[in-house]
Length: 180
Ligand SMILES: [Zn+2]
Ligand SMILES: [Zn+2]
Image 1 (cartoon, rainbow, N blue to C red):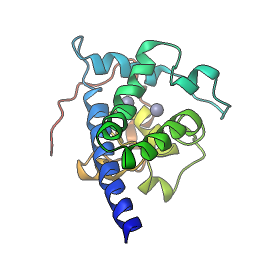
Image 2 (image 1 turned 180 degrees about the vertical axis):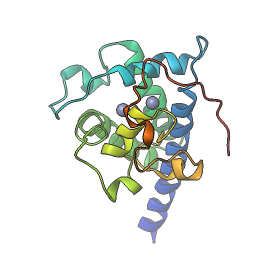
Image 3 (image 1 turned 90 degrees about the vertical axis):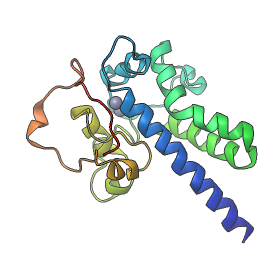
């Protein structure tokens, strides 16, 4: 029963964590000179992703070559785990370690940007083609780890539409977030 309670609390934290990341990511797609999130996140969309490789030593410290790319990961993905770990280390620290390992070893080319991952698993987890679709259609698929919040806020895209060939990163479209 204690294990059940422990996992239940972790699940609640994880949902709140992914909800936060979803909205930070969505806000980061509002192009504005005053939007610091936009300035740091655009680097992510300019990066080249290829075949999986072992992390460089800087990436063990979650440093991705420049402050903007690094801050993007820290603010969007790590910050909630740090806050939870301060107030509730019993639940927060294991989750923070999980996210750290995911970001260092899996997030780049192994899972999130691995074009070979497609199909049913991408309906539940924001991996492979699901996340890569966000690179092609920047108004869609903001979720990290799980696709839930895209479905809740109706920003999910499970197949490429007619605008498939549109290059997106040089001109990230204007978007006013709404809770529709
Ligand atoms: Zn993005
Ligand atoms: Zn990406």
